[in-house]
Amino acid sequence: MAGDDEKSSVFGDQAGSVELLWGGRERPSRGPKPALSLERITRTAIALADAGGLGAVSMQRVAGELDFTKMSLYRYVPGKSELVAMMIDMAMGEPPAAPSPDAAGQPDTAGRPGDSGWWRVALREWAEALAAVYDRHPWLLGAAVGPRVMGPNELGWTERAVAALADTGLTGGEQLDAVVVVNGHIRAIAQVSASMGLDSARAKEPEQVMSAALNELLVGRTDRFPAVSAAVASTGADDTSHDQAWEFGLERILDGLEAYISRGRRG
Image 1 (cartoon, rainbow, N blue to C red):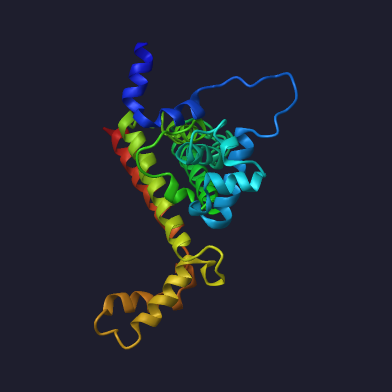
Image 2: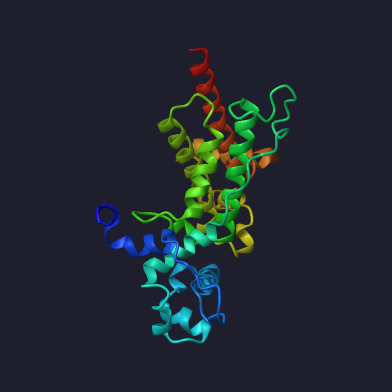
């Protein structure tokens, strides 16, 4: 059929992931509950990834955890790439709900999409929820890259963020670009945290760890790196500068969007 040809031409060898994520296979409503299911397989794989990273996940390992043979898994999922696609979407979960009508804190305009207070609150809550997902599942940072099929949960996150900007006057392309910029900031901070070892006692606060590392590297080298030395030294005297990269970056992004939206409205 034409529709099948079109789907094949777009997704190529990822058609299996499309079928699993979007195929809408009907599940039998009667009869005994099967001992194995795609959901159970996916949750087991997520648990392995949470504990040991994506490299800890293999069809053989998942089968062993479930006390089934590897061949049994192939009745539910064609291979690891399709399994990872399912893992990503399940780990992402449902996006956060839109903020309540009075969330913007502006009695005269609160609750109206497009108002400055409303969309900022909506996008901030979205960013905070996304950061929490990456914190729970750091392997997502490496898994959710490159050409792949987005699942309904993941696309739902994009829908929620774009909806927050829908009535701001931004064009559709600008709305999508804004979401990409916010998402990029959240991912960047999460990458820093993950690279420092989330389970390490030294990595509870990424900026403190980075500052301590820089202090060690700069000993005897301040003449070569005077600007960095001065900046690091100043953080020791100003506690408010610690561990604010996430907050600082997000606020500056939102400030920039608000200024851009305001210019558009004035124009």
